[in-house]
Figure: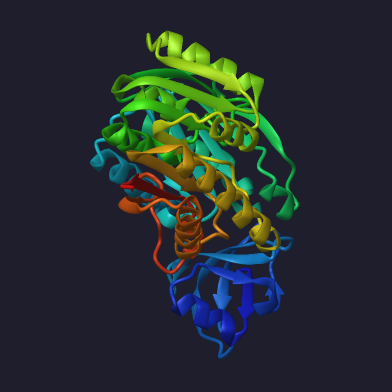
Amino acid sequence: MHPTVKIHARGESRIRDGHLWVYRADILEVHAAPGDVVCVVGSHGRTVGHALYSDRSQISLRLFSFGDVVPDSSLWRRRIEAALAFRESLAIDATAYRLIHGEADLLPSLIVDRYGDYLVVQALSQAVDRLLPELVRLLVELTNVTGVLARNDPKVRLLEGLDQRVELLHGHVPERVVIKEGQIEYEADLWQGQKTGLFLDQRENRQAAATYANGDALDCFSYNGGFALQIARKCSSVTAIDISDEAVARTKANATRNGLTQIQTLSANVFDELRRREVAGERFDTIVLDPPAFAKNKASVPKALSGYREINLRALKLLNPGGHLITCSCSYNVDEATFGQVLHESALDARAHVTVVEKRMQSRDHPVLLGVPETYYLKCLILRRIL
């Protein structure tokens, strides 16, 4: 008998509305093992589709196909081929980018990033973790890469009852890989770096920032200097600030690699440093705010909003009239409207008249699936202070 899961009418309605997830509270009956690909049966006995089943996560089902279409190996192949073809069509001016973006490629809970001749994968559900050996063989066949690394260390795996681990799955993958992003070249730490090595979702926002940057610039929460490196050639000086000594060292090394002598680095708490520079009367023509996710869950939203108000208020006070603020939020729990309201309040408190030049999101290789709001998490606004 094929594994089956029967769901509540509420779960069916969610699927009809375009979402791919069914939560545990909407499960009526389960005849399946953890990590099975299951037939999803509606409350009236109709086959809704097929999904990846988890017995531990609050997300019990991740829809993979609809109606009677069974997700066999050929369907997995076609989905992966379609994801690869889409990235090829983007003509990405970089050697590091996302190949598969989970639900947005109808490949739920599977993440695959390319770094030159290497792939880094993440299996974020029980089913994909079980299927990973087969999926890696397919990926190697379709991409002809030298090595595949599993960065299965995100905390979300714990919610699936899976362990956190980093392991080589194919060939060899060096500790550091040199990648190119437009004219910029820098190292990515695939084994221990943030996410799968770099913040690839900000790639196009970094390039957009360079079209507005000029004069004296401040890059806050700089990590490995991605924004600073992209804007440096347009600026007379760039100060890159991060609280991590290791991140600061990487930025300094990357600046040297690219011959960007106008980049200065500083290890400091950004909140404190912005206040200090305001008191000192410093002013900048370009400021970048790319903080980590302040709101990792709904309970942390009020504190996160306070943090966003603080850094944007300070940045706007430091910004010269005619200058640009590139400000970001990667917190899914803070939506675009809420983030925009925070920026408006910050501008009022700073007594700054501000226009929105661009509203941006994650790079195009990280698409958003309509009906699944969780796939839209990165907000990037480019603001211009006019007074």
